[in-house]
Amino acid sequence: MRDTRIQKAMADMGLCSRRQAEQIILEGRVKLNGRPVKLGDKMDMASDLLSVDGQTIRPPKQKEYKYYILHKPRGYITTARDDRGRKTVMELVADIPTRVYPVGRLDKDSEGLLLFTNDGALANALTHPSHQIAKMYRVTVHPKAEEEQIIALSNGVYLDDGSKTLPAVIRVVAEDDERTVMEMSIKEGKNRQIRRMCEAVGLEVARLSRKSIGAVKLGMLAPGKYRELKPSEVLALKGAAQKASRQKRAKKYED
Image 1 (tube, rainbow, N blue to C red):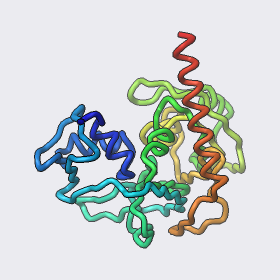
Image 2 (cartoon, rainbow, N blue to C red):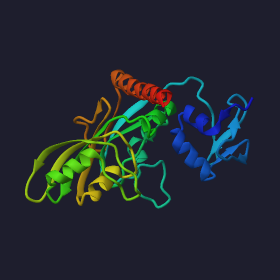
Image 3 (cartoon, one colour):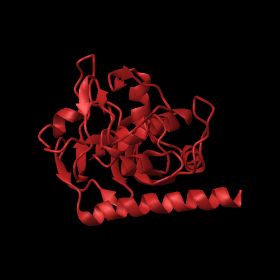
Image 4 (cartoon, rainbow, N blue to C red):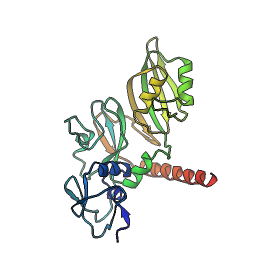
């Protein structure tokens, strides 16, 4: 019986997050039994044949989820492929035996912690805008940040699309006459959010590195290197996602 939405099936099979699956479907890259699909279509996981970019995708016989952390260097884009021939983060994890995908994004000029997994459910939970899992960044800006600018960033600022960011936790690490180095912790994942927040108060980001997501920290992992997450780190991420989901349901019930 066709009872599973195709974007959910793709996430459950570890292809990508549900949001990424929706985009892939909109791009016309997904077929069911040889025919293009559209958002909202459903499939029978037991009998239907799903393909992405012409490659048949089969559910794994046993769901063995894998979780990795990569120290993304600057100059790489966070995507599975690029038609313009630019370097992608997938090149850095090409020797991982399990097919994994990045969780969320870091733009080309940013660096730092990037998660990879084939656990579509967790990837979706970590990137869902309503779940508000804390992510901490080390940010160098020009010119020197004034107190008023830091207060504005902490309280939330209006971005160029008219949306307002949630409050952020900011700690000044170092500063001189021409620059300020800050640690910024946010609970959202808007496109290029840190850069746009700084631009909104008249600051230019010179360097941006993500240092942690929830309880998972980049630590001393060298740029371009990856490691498998410890079981305790996986449990911490799942716990954070479940907590966020419970809080979301509670708020909905209160409303």
